[in-house]
Length: 356
Length: 146
Image (cartoon, rainbow over all chains, first blue to last red; front, side):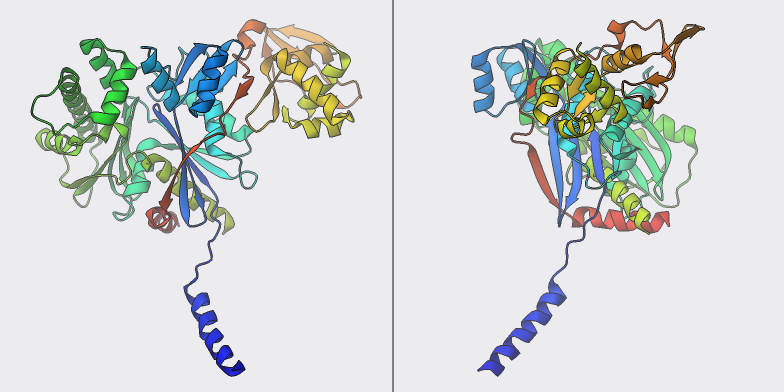
């Protein structure tokens, strides 16, 4: 009897040791500081965990009843003096309820100069999504927009503020351009060679990389927020209402009986695509870069989310006649996560170099 | 401001500008409860602010107060006010404060807001993805950068 037990246990032990993969701790974190959302990514065991917060807030005069509602409905808020600030999705919800527009701590990819509360709010959001470091000086790659080619501002102030703040939290912060992060996340199979476009809320970031080295890198100060603002103006609705509608209902494939708002969104989507691809063509031609094989183009970002976006993008790209041959155009599998994912890949790769 | 409150500010400065209530208590030798009361008073005066993970952080205004009170002498040249070597009440020598442009008013330097309360740790949205989605990228990037 004992013998049989032993013979039964041995193969089990062997198979366990053969099949069980011991989860190795991989340090490093990725942070996507976007105009519309902030995403933090880290590896936890065998999974990648993304912590998310919408980059929006709404100030409402303090009211006990409202605070109770916030607590009950899980609306995230900040209480300051005699004000309540609803944060994230709750801000959007209450903005629509009060027929107001949410306030944004970031505008066109960088810290908003118009919002006095932008800095502390963005710090709180980042601190909360990123959490504590797992070892002192853990590397965190945070996304920054590339220099805009159609607007007169730079990203240096924004970059330094985020950098200092992360340093203060005990991290080793390193910036990564949003477009390059997209290439790290989505073009590993192509040896990090190709074109990455991130259609975000505040900006559109573009990066052409060859073997992970950026060859052309720029941003355009138009994105989903620009569409929302134009549409809100022409349909006479608050911007928040247009944003909420766009995020939940928009289908760019729909041809029959479009509503006024759908029609306006469709028009401004086309204008945005034309604008971005026009600039892309100019920059690629000016770069005189040479690539050995046809390009893979990956598209990502929240603005690319509606059904039919890829088709319109492909059509616009085909009609623009870029100086490169395009092999394939595809949407990233997780449109909203790509930048954080790319930043995480860079951070883990960097952390592993430290160990070597 | 009471001398004890100033002592907290000074200690915060020595600790690099941010510290937990426990660290302040340990460094000053005050009881945890008393140092917390003092820190709360400094929060109200906006000389400190508190982060979501309960750390106290010296605000720009707080740094100014430490600088002003501790100054032995002050020299002015080319519009810049240089803070001289600072000596704390416990005779330890503090590092020299960075040059501070004298034309900056206290109002300008004031930190915008200090938040009293928030429920940020509640119901954080977390999404999980398979590591395979990033492992190829990590391996590829490591090998390409070698």
